[in-house]
Image (cartoon, rainbow, N blue to C red; front, side, top):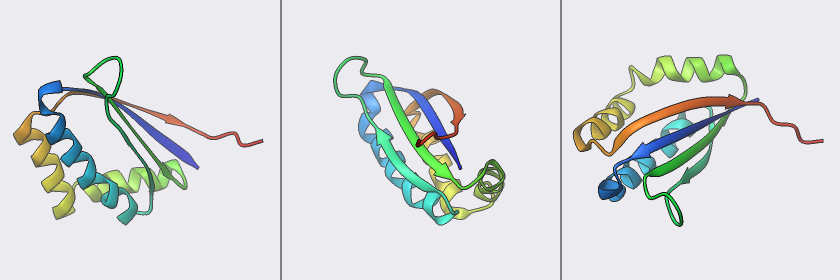
Amino acid sequence: MITCYIRYVIDPNKLAEFEQYAQMWIPLVNKFGGTHNGYFLPSEGANNIALALFTFPSLATYEQYRQDSLKDADCIAAFQFAEDTQCIIHYERSFFRPVFE
């Protein structure tokens, strides 16, 4: 199992747009075999940082999702929405493996 952690730097004046973007991606990750663990939007502290966490059974499954997402109409629409609204300034992606016991 692999968890993808994405740290976004967002435009705080476009928080509503980023939230709409987030809502677009949750079902898409699930559609491609992942489990979305949610987006986390600014509350206290920095007003321009948001996070996302989602899990795939393996890194190979995640990589397949990334390839397939580039050809999926709903994913392309989500990518375009972010581009059109410019709600995301920058993001970085990291991967983690869980330790339960």
